[in-house]
Structures are given as C-alpha cells and as structure tokens.
Image 1: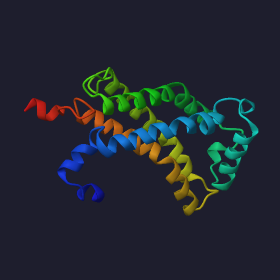
Image 2 (image 1 turned 45 degrees about the vertical axis):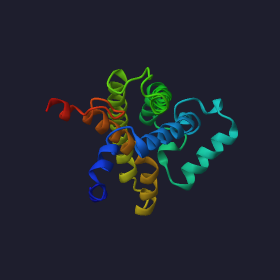
Image 3 (image 1 turned 90 degrees about the vertical axis):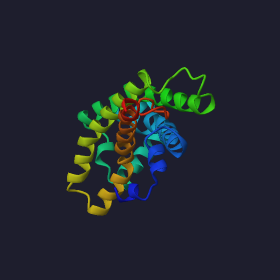
Length: 190
C-alpha cells in the first residue's frame, strides 16, 4: 500500500491495465513461466523418467538447497494435482497471453484478441484459479517445522510472484472494461 502511494494517478492507472511497464512485466512473467512449468514444475506431474537426468538433478538440487519439500520426490499427490492444473490449463493460457500482449502492442487496431471479450474472462479465471492453488502451497511453506524463518522467506520469494501476478491480473480485469487500456467500467457508467 505504501509503495502504491508513491505512484502518481497516471502511473496507478497504467498499473491497472496491460500497458507500459505493466505489459512488459506480464509478458516477462508469462514467458518465464513456460520453461519453469515444462522443465521444473512438470516433474511433479509427469513421470521423472520423461526428463533428462540433468533436469532431474537441477530439481533435486533446488529442493535440497532451498528445502522445498513440495518438490522433493516422491511428490505428494495433492501437490501433483495442483501442478496438473498448471500444466493442463495454465500452460496453454501462457501462450495465449503472450500472443495477446504482443499483438496488442504491435497492432492495437488490428488485434484479433480484444481486452474486453473472452480473453478478459480467461484472465479472471486464470488469476483466480492460480491464486487459489497458492493458498495450500504457501500454508505448507509457512507451517513447515523443518525450515527456519530465513528459509521460509527464500521459499516465499520463489512462490509469491505466482500469487501476486495472478491477483494483479484479476484486479486489472475487474477494474477495466478493456484490460489493454480501454475505458474502465466505472467511468463508462458516469
């Protein structure tokens, strides 16, 4: 809240649409999430033998080094089920979101994916679903008796962006008629 107070009204308005630095931040978020989903998180869903040993070793190193018990093998079934949501439903959305954001930035008048149609609804569904899946994950991190506060803080640093960005996207979608910066719903009614 304090950080938001430092922003001007115009900067705050841009943060509530997929424009400017917000657009770039979401583009980087979705683009970085694709390899993470496929190469790291996917190991909690697919059989490990599907992955080259080097990728398995990276995940094992990460889980051991950062004491991320969620990624230790064998993975708990409840966590694997949450990762299945990521792989099956969220991963395709990442590609669509990247396409929509890039299309909007290059040719806003010729875009086939509009910010006030089905894509906006998909943003709300993605953001709500993802934020919901983070609740049990964060609870496990915070209540893990095997980790100290510093280790919990590091793990929260890894996981919190996957709560913050989806919630931010929901906020953008519900605050605007067009998530790419069209007229917001409250101004249109006035």
